[in-house]
Amino acid sequence: MSYTSFDNIGLVKVLSFFQTHDSEYLSGEDLSDVLKISRVAVWKHIKKIQSLGYKIESKQKLGYRLINETEKLLPWEITKDLKTETIGKRVYYFEEIDSTQNFAQQIALDEKENGTIVIAEKQTAGKGRLDRKWTSPRGGIWFSLIVHPKFDVSTSTLVPIAGAVALSKAIKTALGIDVSVKWPNDITLDGKKVAGMLVDASFQANNIDYLILGIGINFDIDVKKIEKRLSKSANFYGVNSLRKKNDSTPPKILLREFLVQFEKTLIQLNKGEKTRIVKEWTKRADKIGKKISINTSDGKISGVTQGIDNDGALKLKTSKGIKKIFVGDVVLE
Image (cartoon, rainbow, N blue to C red; front, side, top):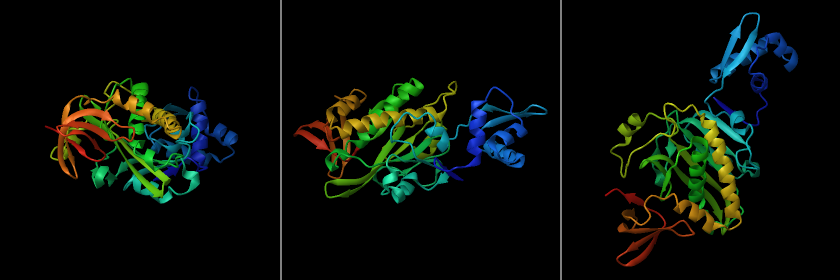
């Protein structure tokens, strides 16, 4: 099952009418008259709406009433009241897909897809950094964001840094939770991973055709189940889930807030405000000034972290001086 934000589907018209009249019962006849569709069509749309996770109550002689919204990140739920200019205005939703990153790459060159997000309820072959598999069960927020940036290749390495800053701010605003950032691309809560990201790109000389920022957020997942599956993975340091038992915040609130925050950081990148973004990342980093080891293509390197440079590289103070590391994994000692 899949939907887009630009489909002109009847169920959205019926749903929108329910959402604007959520405190009253609406009869099938009234819906038929107002929306200019048959009562049979109304009934079919209501059944479909219910199958998408919305709770609609029906009472004889009164009609239907919307009781609860869905938790699914359906396109019209994301674009509704979204306060951005470009980011998130076009949405592709899949109930299940191999990888949102793969689909995004198929459409990314099209100019109209600038700012588009591709979201999945479940991925069967989610992608992580360095061609690793990303476990993405139901309950998480798994999506890819297509960007046609104005900046050149030299700035592209800061995109995951900007994404981490935007997501950290969004989590604080939407859920009231302070999280930390871990180089190169993780978000952590209580020292355990709650989100990660990667970037795929297409370049021509110094120009960028497109960037695709892939993000996975452990919004409301079964932590024990995931830890059991991943505990023997290299550099595994635990997973956490953002939404707690007593919290009813829907995932769309976090996703919409991230899209707003990311557009702001993207504007800063387009203006060349690299230092500002680096400072925002640094104040959320949990390893600054601490000794760590990093696995790189040149072997393991140990030293004291000095933060990141304006190109997103990690600065490590070693016995041989400051080394800049662009690609690597922090090793648990």
